[in-house]
Length: 530
Image 1 (cartoon, rainbow, N blue to C red):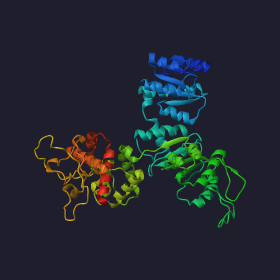
Image 2 (spheres, rainbow, N blue to C red):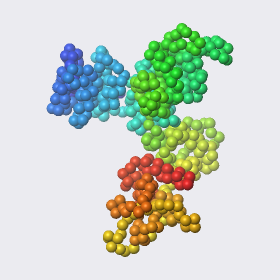
Image 3 (cartoon, one colour):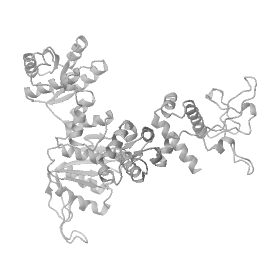
Image 4 (cartoon, rainbow, N blue to C red):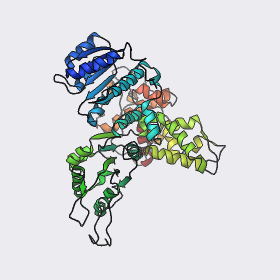
């Protein structure tokens, strides 16, 4: 941390953008007194002019201004290549504005009115980070994660960006919608928000909306009076009452019925609910966190989820990336799971080979972190070796996902002919072959390949590497199958050229490695089902 003296402030150039002159003058006087070289701008247009003329170490930018608001100034400045660290200021102090500013590149957000000491600390921290000084040591996003979400393992930028937003919203009572595929850690995010909030000493109550029958979910959420329905032999408090003063986490909220959504929306708006069988509303003080692996926006347009509830929940959206989009975190996660469960294991398993790790990084992990965790546990339980997990310990689906496909049988060489006669074709059997006819060599291999059309001459039987010389067979063809075959032919060539290395093959083909792996997996599934 930087000391409380002004060692980093003297000589620092600061642009202060605020159309409220008294406030701008106050900031200029204070920062000048601690050694900064200050320039003032009375609006967004003037700020962009100053940025085009001078380089600044830091910019203090007001959000609401008459000519251009701070968001627009920030967008234009970044577009024009100005990279000075920016601190956004606003009298409104809404969380959504803070989140938007940070996503546009602002380093911090100050809510007016703020103390000059807070200004001093913020400017000092941002300047230190930008100059790579002492303040640029530990990543503050990682520090927040370690303090409040130690179970969320990973250093991928897509994950760290989430912690930056969480740091700023945790201390508020705003509603948060956490989206992401199953197994990405949505409940861990919800618990981290609760742990970092002022409600941390009060209950955190999780509710899985998909696990409660539709006929009972209203009673589970709001409680019921004695005799409210058959079997209600005594009054029972609902989850809202249990979570009073704390946080209610609604997982799989996309499974909530429309009738319950109406009542739930009222709770969000009025902060009160009515137990089943009662008529008098009860007040509640509950922060709502919701999670889903569904597209609620699409569901709302289709009418299966209330649009007004979606927008109410979507105040602060947090999207967790799937594990396949942060595969560089897999070694960290594997190490974490190995160390965490070591004391509970009957045998000691401490290490994993580089080859096994490489195969795990190439696997798509449709079940995400949860699937990885279960895989590590399975590997350890079945391991009979020396304490180091290896390729043989991996589940077959993980091993097979990274095995390069066997090359298809090479097509017969083309006969020498004149250019006009040599036409390339992507040929497919246009009708079922005769019962006694053997399948083409490529079909026997089980791989996608271009196979000869028996109606074409030997001269035309060669694989097309470009569509330029393609000749459509007289009887036509299945376009989708032709495109897929051509695609797989190129993928096979790339894998053969790179010795089965998917990373290099994906570079040759100009596609993401995960896309390449997924195409191979789909082909393998299709071949297995045929």
